[in-house]
Length: 397
Image (tube, rainbow, N blue to C red):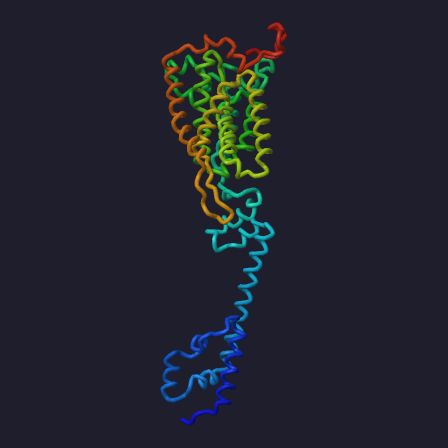
């Protein structure tokens, strides 16, 4: 095959070089990389005597199309890179986290990063469990309250006998209220049944509101299993403490179990303070007000602040054990738990079982704790007005 002139070859080489200058900012790119034909075709044509320059010239149209695509992709990647740098430079870390999808393991984490990263260096994934346990508990409490009224002859007692608009003491005892003497005589079910009984419709209404406000929301965050353990365990713990310190006083109510949820909410806030961001102080204020209000409600007759206090302590310990949230940085990387979280969780796992054993032994060994604490009964029920005669009291304790 005759050789081309030097001018012809130079012209072909310049046309190829111009295509490469469009494709990439890199000055030199091997010609074989961009040829649309296979290496075997190129080798065969070169073997027949055709130069590499003529092969490139033959497919010149294809080279220009491929070069334009390379140019577009390079420009798009450069724009993305500059946008990420601009976002990070402006300090918009939450938007940067949401955009940086390659480092996030799923869409949940991307949304959480976008929503929460502006509140701090760490965040937790949003959960949305269905609150089946709280819903079923509310239904059971309502049905049992109606049953109490039925057992009481479908009537409510006078305000001075029961200011909470409910049945008589005899009816509550018959339905399974906490009575220490009967528990020691073998009626063990009275450790459990007071949790679903209520002294009246006022008592039930407040507990249903508490269950809705705190039980439903916590169950959505942590799931039915954890919340049911806290609710039932705290209720039992509260009954045990009440049976020891107030053996002569009849008491009922899910308040001890609900105070367990309050205690768990406190442990969640203390354990995961940084995850709450700017709302932590507002949540703290809500918990303080709710705790004080419910302790004040426990000063009414048939209610039991010892059950409230016992439930609160149990819920606090169970919360420290069960409600440690996983923490992620703004890029979705799982973070190690802090040292204080590990220490508190370990202590709670040890202390709570010991307290259960101690309370059970004190109860069944018939240790008389109440006689050494004459004023303990006033923690749970205060006769009002203070200083009034028995005839002028609003209620009896």
